[in-house]
Amino acid sequence: MTRSQIASQWLPLCIIGFGLVITLEAAESPAPIAPPVDASWLAKVETIENGLVRVGADALHGGRLVEYSLGGRNALYSDALHPEWVFPDNDHWVGPAGGRFDIGPEEILLEHTVLTDGPWTIERVDRLHLRMVSPVDTVTGVQLNRDVVLDPGSTRLRCTTTTTNRSDRLLHRSYWGRSLAPGGGIFITSLTPDSRFLNQFIEYTLYPTFQILMQPKDPAVTIRGEYLMLRGAPLQPKIGLDTQSGWMAYLMRTGMLFVKRFPVYPERRYADLAGLTISVWSNQDRMVELEPLGPEERLAPGQSATFTEDWWLLDHPFPADGEEVDPARIRAFADQQAPPAP
Image (cartoon, rainbow, N blue to C red; front, side):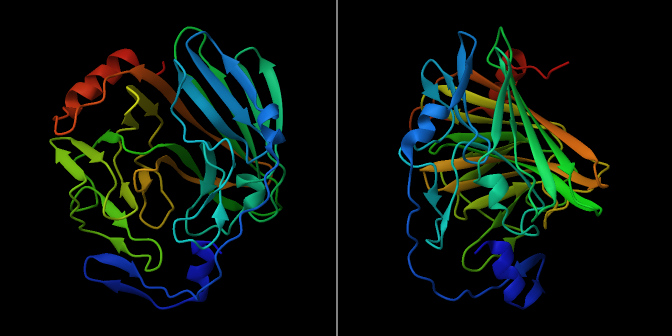
């Protein structure tokens, strides 16, 4: 059962203090049973590489990426023995891991496993361009088309998702990037001065209480000038921001900086519960999910909308324990080595 389904069955929904607090109580369920694994999917992963980075696409489990590697170091969390992993509340199996690209609004759409877990088709458009296409999903009314294009002379990977309304009604949908990377790193982004959040970020408590904390205090989160850093696992599993910066970076223990750039539209509506442009979910130090969010798209039947993330991998040393990190220097390094696309 998804959080959205639980939320639809349990009330009340109440406003407390400065924030929205959703208090839910779910019935106990038996421990999940891992679905069977057919390891043959590994042989069907399609790859592209340019001499610098290698990209692996798994169309059989939700049109995901399972590899984005520099010098043999994979920036994506991917379990080769099992394409799925158990949800931290031990409620059910979800997945798959790796570089996922979903749709929202989160907490509002029902679970749509045809898109997130089911088999897609894959086409090699050219040497450095793969295209994955989902089935039509009757739950959400959409079909997804995903193009991943590797730059021939750099580590830049352009990931474009096209959402097409295949229903006979007007749909309200939004882009939701969900790239899982190995945990234990340092997340960095820039803030904007007109945030709606008093502390520049919020936190989600998730299972079993599902509260949105509007004024969180978390030792894992540091705000230094115009930058926010998340180092290690936060007290709550998810943080959210409404920054308009359009970039994030994740410094990994393997000595890589994973940079993402994406568009932000301040004049448009962001339709998840808190109106976020970025969220970060952590499963302790095991994995972290780096999530750019797109604005609400009003799609008439047959209409499409696209959203593009640009990725880079850069060599950068990971700081020693106790060593300070200067986010402004990280930003300057990213801007020099991974500039915005023209």
